[in-house]
Length: 68
Image (cartoon, rainbow, N blue to C red):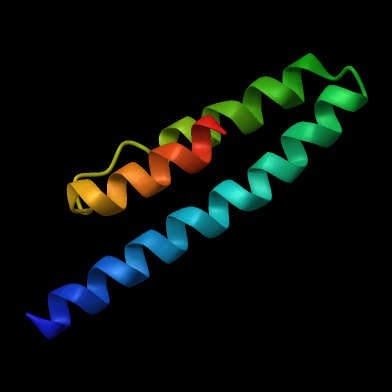
């Protein structure tokens, strides 16, 4: 059970780190009116939601971060 909790924390941390970085890049692309880059960053963020490794509670945290 403890290993599973550690795996969940690791998967969530990895996902959140990617999303935080891509949110920053997305903001810069929007400020620069670079639609292609903005769409690319958005796509990568949404791709992070294509996981079945997270429990619903952790998935919701990831989902909330993407949608903010």
